[in-house]
Length: 165
Image (cartoon, rainbow, N blue to C red):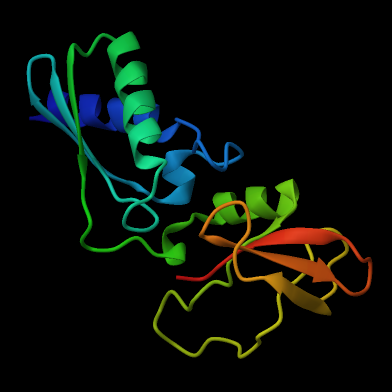
């Protein structure tokens, strides 16, 4: 039904605008974890979320925040379902999300080729502060399991790198 499609798009926009609890600079839509929003009937909505990795502790906070936003918009019954397949990938981060990560001081994951073609071969991670590719790994894990801690050799600033998955 056209009305449901318009409502689903509106509700998807609202759910997608929820900030990620671990990376509040990104919305759930920009992070790519919001998979689907479906109107199941009058006042009933199902939202599908895919965590960045199995066992992600932020999934409960994401679900609660989505429920709150949709309840505030007048949806009395919201069901948030965790979907593990297909698995989330850093390819799911939008271009705007990658831009925001870099602006926030987190090196975004390297993009894969969208058309399946060759990807420039580089193992370097660009410093989000000065742009140098002369960086070094300090720790494979940072504040969250999806990030590594690196330091720029040129400007000496430490920074997080969102690891490719």
